[in-house]
Image 1 (cartoon, rainbow, N blue to C red):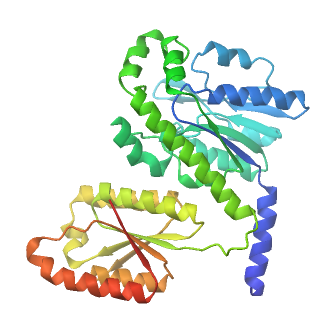
Image 2 (tube, rainbow, N blue to C red; image 1 turned 45 degrees about the vertical axis):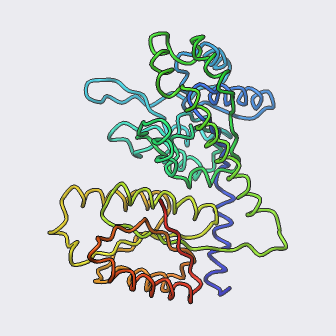
Image 3 (cartoon, rainbow, N blue to C red; image 1 turned 30 degrees about the horizontal axis):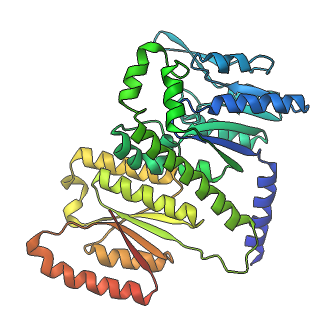
Length: 373
């Protein structure tokens, strides 16, 4: 390790020690008891003499949850007038000024009112952690970015408020709040989750037994994956950990590109590797030849990749497979991720030979190729 790297490593250690610790409760669906558990923990901490305060809690008018607010110091919310309405948001600056030892912040995937300093609440939490304040927060599994397509497949609902996977990865502790499907449905029917006028709609949509079971599986896998990664990162092993760098190769098809990006991000996070998104602009995809909506989708794909922790590579090349190979070698990539390529019949003969050559070159460089569905 040279002097510059050594100094940077030491600085990283110092900065990490100054940051607050982050505990995250993950649930499979609304109503499992994440907020309730956070408030229970706050009471236990207060009894132990810890300076804990509520930064933001969403009770959803649930009696059991409201009752637990009693006795926990509450930091006033910031009031904002937006489009003629008075709205309330987390007051980040007041939290930093008061500097409690621990702050409880609910609804991690929340989108802040337009004009706020940060667009998302998870960005507020990062700012608070940087100030050296410990945070306890909560999120449902359907709000994790890389699981978006899985959730949509299960529920047929597109979840718009999402958090990057790296926010889960950076948590010092991740706790799953679990409940059986039968118990959850009973809570719903008893009016402990939603008001009576919303119960039937919930039972017909998100709260179907088959949906709950599949979401429960996603939540359990997410927490188990986090624990396994922590073990790999923190427990000494006699086996050398295989470091991997990934490259997601995308085109201008927004939906397909986002799917490749999400899956590559999950792989890279698991292996603690760097990852890149490569977009190769061929003469057929010059700016003036791509529809404006496809250009917007491409820009949004780049933005999502950056939020998930990836680095975007854009280049012009006449030969996409060759461009992939060149960048894979240049960036020391161990795994290339692509979607299933669409090749028209009349170009099949040309491309089969070309892809075969590329595969042989990837093999020589010991680079794996994953074709994602």
